[in-house]
Image (cartoon, protein in one colour):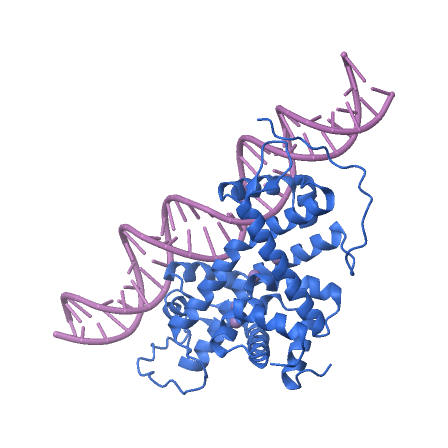
Length: 161
Length: 161
DNA sequence: TTATAAAGTTAGCTTTGGCTAAGTATTGTT
DNA sequence: AACAATACTTAGCCAAAGCTAACTTTATAA
Ligand SMILES: [Mn+2]
Ligand SMILES: [Mn+2]
Ligand SMILES: [Mn+2]
Ligand SMILES: [Mn+2]
C-alpha cells in the first residue's frame, strides 16, 4: 500500500562507460532473440543426431528407443516425429521405423561433428568425460561458428592462438 | 507403399565398446533431462540478472525496459513477472517497478558472476567480445560447477591445468 | 487542470513440448 | 492359428513463452 513509487529517471543519459563492447538495449535484445531461436532448433537437432546414431548402432531407429534415449514418453516421440516430418527432416510411416531425409542426414552430420568438437574441447580443458558429455548436450546448441572454430583449434593445440 | 519393414534387432547385445565413458540409454537420458531442466530455469535467470542490472544502471527496473532489453513485448514481460512473483523471485505491484526478493537477489548474483566467467573465458580463448557476449547468453545456462571452475581457472592462467 | 502520451495490464490466441489413459497394430510364443 | 506382449498411435490434458488488440493507469505537457 505505502510502497515507494519512484518515477522513471528521465535524466539518465549517464552511460558510465563500463562495458567494452556495445551494450545497447538493441544489441542485448539481439542476443536474447538469438538464444530463443537456438532453442527452437534444439529438439530437431537432438532428434536427428540420435536417429543417425541409432541407425549406425542398430541398423534402424525405433520410436521406443528414441524415447528411452531421450528420457521422454513414447507419445512425445510420436508427436515430435510428426513435427520433424512436417519440417522435412525425417521419413516416418505409422508403425515403421524412422529414416532421415537428405536434409535430416546433413543436419545430423553437422550436429554429430559439433557435438564431438564440444566434448573434446571440454575434455582438453580437463573436464572428465561424463561431465563433458553432460554439459556438451546443452552447450552445443549455443556455440557460434567462431567459437566452435576456437574450440576445435584449442583441442588440437592447447594454449596456442 | 513398398517400404522395407525391418524388425527390431533383438539380437543386439553387441555394444562394440566404442565410447569411453558409459553410454547407456539411461545415462544419455539423464543428460537430456538435465538440459530440459536447465531450460526451465533459463527465463528466471535471465530476468533476475537483467533486473539487477537495471537497478544498478537506472536505480529501478521498469517493465518497459525489461521488454526492450529482452526483445519481447510488454505483455510477455507482465506474464513472466507474474511467474517470477509466484516463484518468490520478484516483488511487483501493478503499475510499479520491479524489485528482487532476497532469493531473487541471490540468484541474480550467481548469474551475474557466472555470466562474467563465461564471457571472460571465451575472450581468453580469443573470441571477440561481441561474439563472446552472444554465445555466453546461451552457454551460461548449461555449464556445470566443474566446467565453470575450469573456465575460471583457465581465464586466470591459460593452458595450466 | 485538463488533455495527451507513455506505460502497464488483461484477454485471448498460438506453438512447443511434455504427460497419461486408452485403443490399435505388430511381433513373438505357444 | 490363437494369444500374449510389446510397440505405436490417438485423444485429451497441461504449462511455458511468445504474440496482438483493446483497455486502464500513470506521467507529462499544454
Ligand atoms: Mn543437445
Ligand atoms: Mn539452451
Ligand atoms: Mn542467458
Ligand atoms: Mn546472462
